[in-house]
Image (cartoon, rainbow, N blue to C red):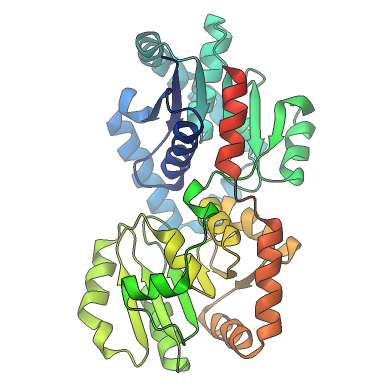
Length: 370
């Protein structure tokens, strides 16, 4: 039985979900494969991952502009390269033992850090296991660039051109989209979804999300929408944010509109099928899911760095609206609810930009490497 490893980082972010989506597509296309989705930090140092996540969370929360200045800067990469090499060398022995034990026929990565480790492994030990780097945002950053990567998958022609400019051969780069679940290929009838969750079929529906971690001022967003608008219903996905979920559980009865709240769910495709408008953060995976379902999308307060770049790309394509603050968010929402032609136009642009079979495309590339 042939084995494939998909390396990601973090148990909570979009990189893990992207890996799971590729695994799902591979198992759908080739059920006989043994596909493993692994957090590379589990085999290097779980403690190091906790420290990295803590520092990242601290920086994003209190010093977001600093993160924006550091992100994807070649000068920063040059400074960090010696440290990265030390970390990679320390990780090589452990990861080599893991690979030698599993003996995969192919390795994919959905984040740049494991991509760099496997690329270094290929370079130093000169082994020939194919490596595919799956870029899960609309623009790749400089930490993705390794000549040892056999193929890259990207979401757009613009992303492909960035990699070519960085010296990656054109034939190595495939436009496949950001890997979303194959469940997004099938539309679900709104009537069935309404019956399942108790939604009102006659009201316009606004879906509010903050990614898998429930990041953002979702409570404040719901409060201002509920105060400013009547005759709509709001669906909130709190993700892993237990504090936020408990807040909605305590306060939802005080809203004038219908408010439905969920924790971390595996049926987001159903909630998107039912909704008209989504308000969310600018993570590559969430936005790609929204585009696939043809949602009118309002992004608010993108994190400096990759989320800002995602937002810039989508604004250029005319597929989203970007709100600078809660006041502007209300203005955009009001315009979409009142102007059906504007709402329809945004939905159509979303559908036209989306690559709904992204995970299947990546799976086909992977199978061609075996």
